[in-house]
Image 1 (cartoon, rainbow, N blue to C red):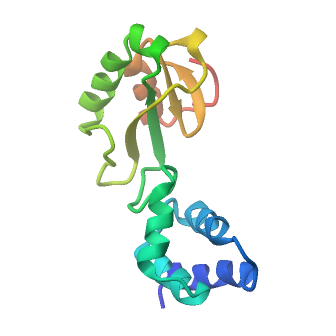
Image 2: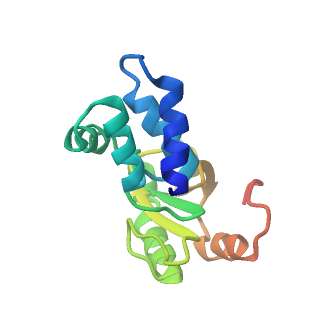
Length: 158
């Protein structure tokens, strides 16, 4: 039995018998694995008495559920108006070039995922990127990426 099956059964057991908990179950699974593994989806459907198609339909409605593994470092380039005007396309292109990834792709070694997102609400800092849910100015994406690759602490402002 795979780890995904074992962990998913434990998660489902916490919610069993309660109504309206499918999204909570999926959030817990994704929190553990970083995405929704197919075998986990099968367990949820079986244990919660819903069809697999219904479960995938519900999960795919939400943009924050992922069906493929994501990188340890998720880089989200803001495309809001202020960021766009201040060069977010250049920032995205630089990250794409440096990582060898297109928008929406994850590196084969699962180190990086590159995404473009709508406004993150930090317009005064534009252009910005979010790295694992923390916001950074992206005036020099090459330097920011070099810092990430060196494994330096990227919790501080750049």
